[in-house]
Length: 209
Image (tube, rainbow, N blue to C red; front, side, top):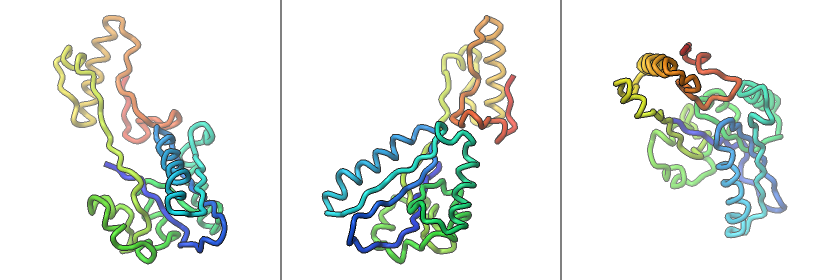
């Protein structure tokens, strides 16, 4: 279970004139539409209901506009934060980066009512945005990682759903070898959601031939 965290750099601003808040996020998977839905809901509904003169602007790093990939995005944000750049106001990040970027963010406990922070569903969820007793981020959404299996092929080769990487490798080899023996050469043993330039074996030393 993973959480994406939204990190805030801005304190509350007196609403004396129209304000554009720039949000930056990296999305190499299928979450681009989700972010845009959040932005649209805020701009088209929330600001009107609360009479706010604020507009959110989404700056999206995707596989289409950032061919170098995840490392390029991380290094770009590193550079901007180190230079104390004001290009972006809100950062959406994986909680793995909480420790890395916490020194640059404000403690939200000083600005948000306690009931808002306490409204999150579990301690695990909200704690992912804490660093050294400071609340530097709030969750945007919860991600669940799932493994989909072809139950027909598993039954055909008398295999159960893999529960470990070793079992996945073993089962994949058995199924692929069996299918290739019948000239089914189009079968993919394992399909991941990593960007095209990032391979699964780079993370797990996993290769299936």
